[in-house]
Amino acid sequence: MNPVRILIADDHILIAEMWQILLAKNENYQVVQRVSDCSSLASAVTEHKPDVVLLDIALADGSSLDLLPDLKAISPFTKYLVVSAYTDLVTVKKAFSSGVHGFITKTSGLEEVNEAIATILQGKRFQCREVKDSVAGLFLGASSSRPATIQGALTIKEREIAYLVYKGLSSRQIGEKLSISPKTVEVHRHHIYQKLGLNKSTQLIWYVQNNIHLFTGLTR
Image 1 (cartoon, rainbow, N blue to C red):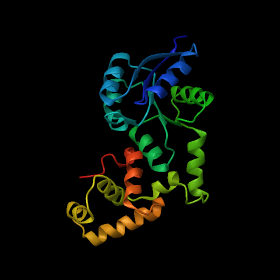
Image 2 (image 1 turned 30 degrees about the vertical axis):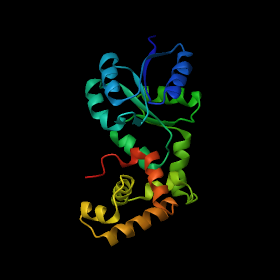
Image 3 (image 1 turned 120 degrees about the horizontal axis):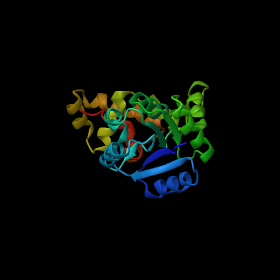
C-alpha cells in the first residue's frame, strides 16, 4: 500500500517542522514538501499532486482559501485539511464554502489528525471536536464573552468598517469610501465594539490584525 503523500502549508516554521516530525513517524505517511506562502503552495501542488494538504489559512503572502479553486483545477483529487488557530463559525463556514474537506485546530491531537486524514480520504467532511463544540455553543447559548463565537455576529458591513479602521481611516474617510455618513460609521463602530467586547480603536486594530483572514476580500 502506497503511503499518503502530504504537503504542509504553514508560514510558522516551528509548527510546520513539528507536523513534519510527527507525521514522519507514521509509516503510512510521506511528507513531500513544506511551504509557507501561496505562490510556493501552487508550485508544490503542481509538482507533487499530493493526496492531502495540511493547510493554514493565513500564509505569508495572503489567504490560502483564495487559491483553492486554482489548486483544485491543478490537482482535482487532492484533499485539503485546514489546520487553524480559529474555531469561530465565520472562519469554519468560509473554509468549507471555499472547498476544503476538513477542519482541525492547532491544538488538535495526533489521534484526531489521523482520524481527519482518514475521513477526508474517504470522501467525507471532517470537523474536529473543538470546532463542533464551538458551533454547538452558538446554538446552546454559549457565553457572549467569548470572542471566538462573537466574531461570527459581525455583519459584512461591520467587518468592512473594522478593516478600514485597521487601515487607519477616520470615520469621515470611511464614510466617503462607503458612501455613508460619518455618523452612520460611528453607529457601526459602536456595534462592532459591543459585539467584540472592545472599547477603543487600538483594541479593534489588534483584533483585525490577529484575525485578518476574516476580512479578506471584503473591502472595495
